[in-house]
Length: 441
Ligand SMILES: [Mn+2]
Image (tube, rainbow, N blue to C red; front, side, top):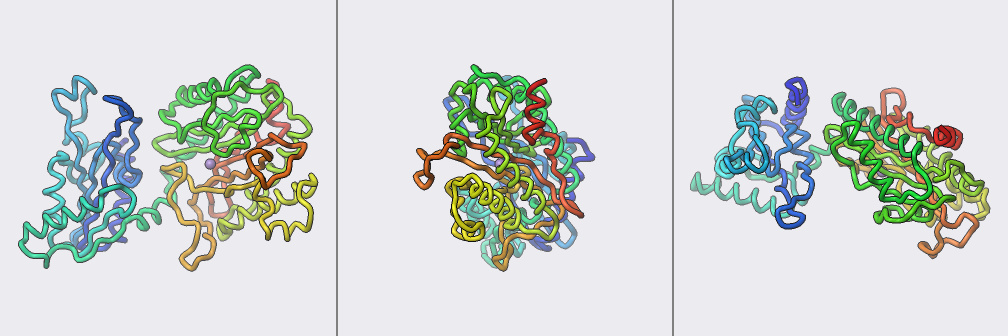
């Protein structure tokens, strides 16, 4: 993080402090490293809220925002390096160096968190913590309250209210600032390049696992240190399994490959799906299904503008899927009635969108406070990913058709702008012609 970037995080803290109001304290904690097997850790993921507010990625870090009438004081508590940790893990910045990097007021050793937080709680009105998200954190928060009351020998001066900080963070995080959009653009650009590289090199006889490794390699060589999520590499009828994870089958020569994956850039995620023929040419049946999914994708994109709603985007996709299924003769009846009765659901069983940001399924509400569908505003980022899946053996509500075993999902990453939307992943080929042309190269 550059000093320039640390001011981005400072602005977010200021915005949150304004919402919290004076005489309040907020505390967030990143989880410790988790062991996968003895002495081997899972890849570490900091608490997105801690990262969002500070840029701190240290395991077990605690972030404290103290808002008084004089303004905001930010403290981070982190594990210090030791003589032993240097030997095993290499050098770590000192607390003073960390303070410079993060641009915060104080960086304390983690061991001082309990005492410092308890003492800062005294005299505060409200204590902001995340409730219901991390096992045991509420207990820790109550212990800090208890310690604070013991220090004072009275309960009068400790906060009288604990408030769930999640809605405040959600509200901030669902509107991306310019710096975040920059990160998302980078993640999108690298992910598109990786998708294109796979389209150009995929061949029958490769396994799904090989393609998974190559996709990760294409992202890594472009600087993405992490995937947004485990890549879905689904050949042939595996594409009809929505979250297919096995990735262990050979790619069929005459089948489609559904590749759903993305890289992270500065912890911001891209999430792109493309479906293309392993041998480079769509069969007639594959093309019929693909064109319906593509028309749903394009209709959904046309519904992405400020003032539109989350549900309008989905319904635009649904309408095209239903019309397509009627054209194929898979569904019979009036389009409107089929939409109403959700007759399409066995073939399109998921939502069209999810929020995208620091988490691949990012925080964000799908409903307004009055229960209506969420209205879209500039700065919101989400996926548009309709799909169409034919597999009567998986789904008893389907009848077996000549499209059996074909699954298609097409996914782009969308930023709502002042006058419409920007498709951050538009450079990834999506039409039948563009995909076949790239695969011929
Ligand atoms: Mn997705």
